[in-house]
Amino acid sequence: MPQPDATARASQTRLQRGLACEQLAAEYLQARGLVVVERNLRCKAGEIDLVCLDGAVLALVEVRQRSGVEFGGALASVTWRKRRKIMRTARFFLRRRAWASYPMRFDVLAVQGLPHAGYRIVWIRDAFRAT
Image 1 (cartoon, rainbow, N blue to C red):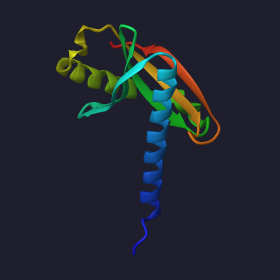
Image 2 (tube, helix red, strand yellow):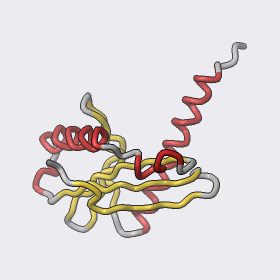
Image 3 (cartoon, helix red, strand yellow):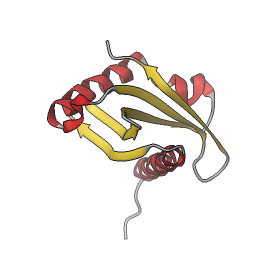
Image 4 (cartoon, rainbow, N blue to C red):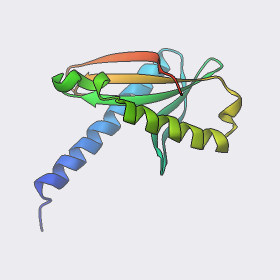
């Protein structure tokens, strides 16, 4: 039976780590009173990892994970390009869902370290604004 090559194994590992981080983020936010209403909203414009209700506010949450702090770590990986993709995706979904009436904010939840090892979570509410 053929073995997957190193690239395929690395991609699978990254995917598994990403799913574990998103689950960790969802549990972290739920423990703080947020209600997760959607996960992994995808369209051509991009993806929104978590959509949560924080009281009457719709929180669109970008989950980022980095095992090390090189190049600024998980928080620094939310570049202006990434923010622009998230905003475009939000516009697309807000037109198609009943969420348009909710006040909205963009949050970033960074997992520094590995989800099944030592890690630190930093949650930034209202991390950036739509322009």
